[in-house]
Length: 327
Image (cartoon, rainbow, N blue to C red; front, side, top):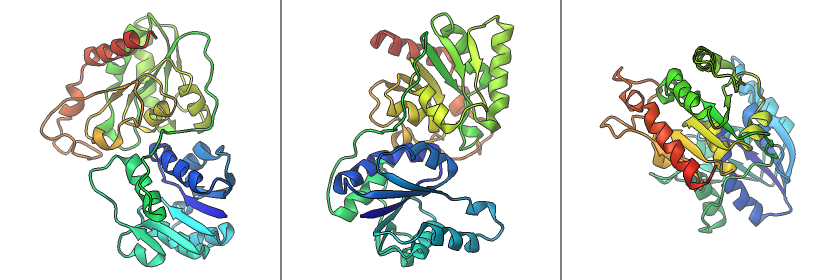
């Protein structure tokens, strides 16, 4: 059995699809998988033991997308069974072009015409459950999704280490403020070494945190922004003692390794994208009428959902985890 899996684009979604992939593995434990997705999603899951081939989808980088998708589909080739965990037209169109026998995805006009099996998405579900629903629908089962899982060995640190993650790819509305992160890091630096995370486009936020720590005379930190691959990121987060983060891809990596985590939520719906099955995770958020708005940028220009979250609130949440789990 050869199975083609078109992964979600973003890191967090890719981590959240892993319980669905485990359900697929349970049905076909001897299958060979081909993964197609963004460079981020491929790097995150390429170590899965059933993965035989990986293909990076860079078709968005071309002015006309149809031709490069056709070329990619010919390269990937036909499979016995294919799933797309994306909701776009091009996801279903790509499966069709591979000439795979069975093509499975979410029902949405007009993409449904390219699928042999399509299913309606249930509303008000955690994203992990949404991905698992497709597998249950195809196999006509009703299994509950299990834990998130990544196949990388966590880094071992000499000292207790807390990660500070000020970024979030979704947009500025999801980001708490660098100075507030720095104030939290300052207090925690008495007990932990500090690692500051951030992607290549998030260096300014990480550098601002670093500048504050330097001004306050904090020395036991390291700024990793723009210096880590996805593999590095997974291994480092997997070895942390504590993680302070916005709602983001790295937050879900921490959940996969059950890292004690303080997750700061503003405009996004925590019931849909909070840490899945991480008993050591806590959420800090404010209950204001306009949240969750699900917008990339605050449409009301006040950003209260994040501004009203104080360093004290985050520190108290961190201390609750430190005390409960003897960190």
